[in-house]
Image (cartoon, rainbow, N blue to C red):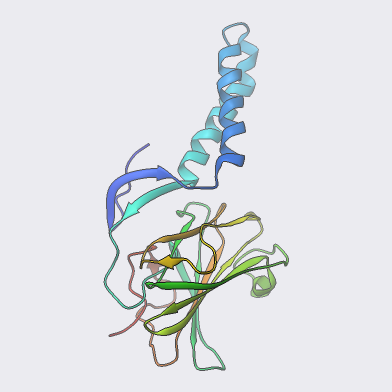
Length: 215
């Protein structure tokens, strides 16, 4: 598997935690059917697509090392800024859309302590749909130097499993991995009141690297 060339990458790529239930059986089936092709070429009909699927999953679940970016807040996700919306309480929501080709591991925008990790049941409409706010999601709250910081991992039509890596009470460093959304979807981060966004709609972001706040 080739190394990442994204800004902030240290060049070493590993697999994300929480992929075993998907990857292990697929890789095992690919290995078995490949061995069976020695007995009968007909097994290639199963071995070839299974091997391709395994390769695709290795790419989908890559987890490159990152050198944290500079800023009070950095992006929690790889993707594209889908929207930037002022919130009634004075905060600003930055929604980042993650395609199936993006890295699916999400990272902490700021250092602090995890004060809450709440799983909220919901639907599975596409992440770009306006009704995706009602999708299955995990709501994070961090106690940071800027105060309470909310990050929401939102499942989509394909991504139906969110895997948190941390629990309430855990200390977290800026850019540290906090969880995985399998096959991508959307991540929202709510900039605290008084913090202006440094990104624009349509801009690409890199988790743990791209700065979200203006100085």
